[in-house]
Length: 306
Image (tube, rainbow, N blue to C red; front, side, top):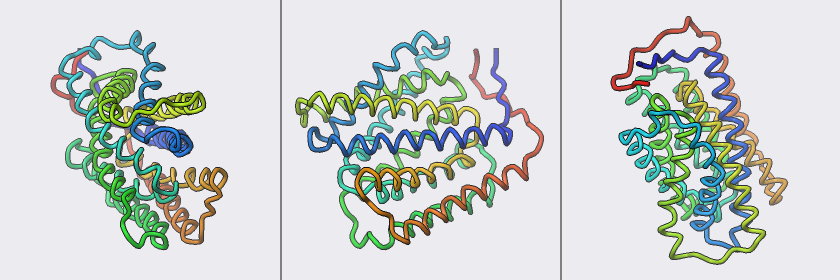
């Protein structure tokens, strides 16, 4: 039978935003782990190990798959997303070893801009000037943080700037797949295909890891898997253009971990930028609640059956 898609209510969007914030904390912890093992293994190998462990952790989810999760047409979509996501991930892991946590996170904020535009153009999500203004303001907050420190574009910055559009495409593909497949399939297939793809460059940089590194990368797999569960669930229940500003809050986690783990004390520009980002996110959430209307039933998606 056909699936009926219900337009998200403000509660759905709010829960989706909270899931994005929690996922950001997990990913920031992952960033700390990647930097911690950089002296032992190449970042490309760290990416492979993280996704390899993640795939093993996710194997039990296969028993929760629905019938449509084995649809060859959907499997092709998962594989294509895996390719796009792998490119983004490998560039991101490389950049982690070259930049401070705050700078890395701030430059990653270009991805939500691409996501919001793509959600409007390709997914039919409603356009709100307030949402767009909030995202632009939050992005400017990230620029404020980077202003004192970036004089020339480093290799790490270039890697992140290339990674961000690929991350945005992966996010848009996830939103589309969430309409047709279960959250279990989304998370498992992504981990499986990224592991397969990242194994290719890893062959050229492999170094036998220590037990300490194995333990840390296993922890990275746990953190990242939890983050993807949070984000995949958010994709299912909330609108991307509403939840994307929540990714900016990851900067707060990055500043905190950077301070406690690496003594990277944020300066006045970091504080000002963080205040702008939090203010923009809070503004969008408040406007969404005020403007919330009755729940609407969206049109049936062609070809979507159970």
